[in-house]
Image (tube, rainbow, N blue to C red; front, top):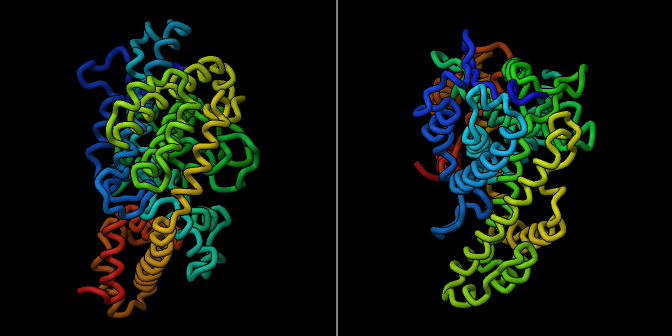
Length: 444
């Protein structure tokens, strides 16, 4: 892979090249990506989607939206710092007009979208959709779908759904948000289809990154960017190098900030903050730390220094392994290769024990399973009954609640099901709960 091709400014529908040197510096293409994402309805819905604590009644716990913004801030820093060195290594990029801010803008835009495809109720939302088709009422559709189409459903993936949101054409709107291909490439942490599942231990094979419904868009992006193919039999590619920085930004934020949320909520003792985070930080000013009067201030101080240390580490690992990354030979995430791997795992393990497995989280996830299964059942049945002209009066009423953009007439069962999955996955936690109550007669 080569950087000139990987930094493509092309967008869906372009008929001419977009040379970097011809860009308007006051309205740079990669920065336009970020703006389009921020103004999208899919991004706004993240303000009411679970990050760690579902439907928390406190005012400081992170949502998907605040988490995504923080990841983009870290991602921008990672991109700029890496970009500064890459321009020195590849002076041709400077001649073409690229700056270190381009790298920062690409990584920031891809980072702010990294959770845009996640369903309501956190990662349990993905599992709830999958289990509806694997063991629930959706199992009856298996025999009518191809293996890859069915795998898309039983292993529903927020990353693939995110790519769908960013690229899906609708009537009058071609190419979704029409982001630059460089940003879409950096977004694709798992550039493969749902089958075969985890064919290797390479990090790019850990999950999958697109549904069969967006296969042509995916192939268009990876071919334009010159991403290296992993398999000639299946659509599987090695990562765009900047995807490693997007992943690192997310890993840094959820490791440290979820831990911080747990402390501020009282799920983790404050003593753990100094004990665990001090293993990442060598220059803690303990006098300053103990001068701070409030738990939130003390943990925020440690969080800021810890994030800075991990950014330094991620930048160094990327730059030291640039050649391997470009060749597809770097098989782990950046933080899995860092000197703080053991300390990071300690923090994650205590977060799992104290936060992710807390009673509050589990209770809300259980409710989410039921809500998502019921919503899928009602809307999939109604849409399929309409197709066979056998809909009931209830189905007709339900379809009046389903936005028109999700009722595109098609004789393809997979496409009809995906329309409903797309609708449900884009709901906020609160909206899913309110709609479920209406459909089950709990409120009018």
